[in-house]
Length: 166
Image (cartoon, rainbow, N blue to C red; front, side, top):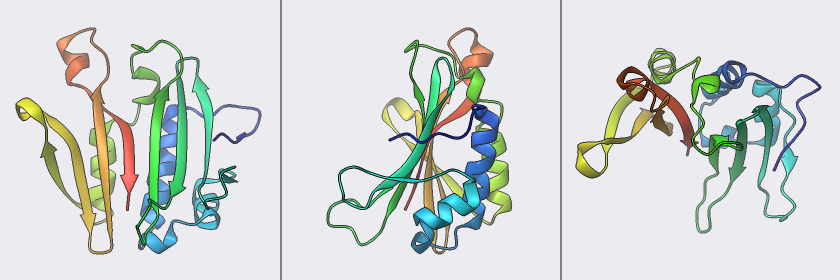
């Protein structure tokens, strides 16, 4: 599901700033509407062809990267789920440098400033799988990835890959 964002593609930093603005505007899951997302991201939302009420936006932002932002209602759920993802569209091993100007530390600082508390969720071998951010009426998960495999510093530089909001 893609939507044009104008003639000039957005940068990874600009997409991240728009996501943070959107997150700051959300009081609860009830705000996950096409109108609210358009108002707070400036992106035109498109209804999914499936007719299931899903909607979203997305675009290429770099030769190797695009973003996707969509909202769907999982089967059996009473709430919408927002999924934001930076997706590799070129080289499957492309470094995250073009989309990591606002890295995980910058996101975490902004989210904590919005009143979210955070906790890590661990996967196999004690590795952080994702971070949970909670407010009383909203929860989100931030999935991270190292910037690249070029050096230990780049491996350890945490970039935001995916955000889910419920």
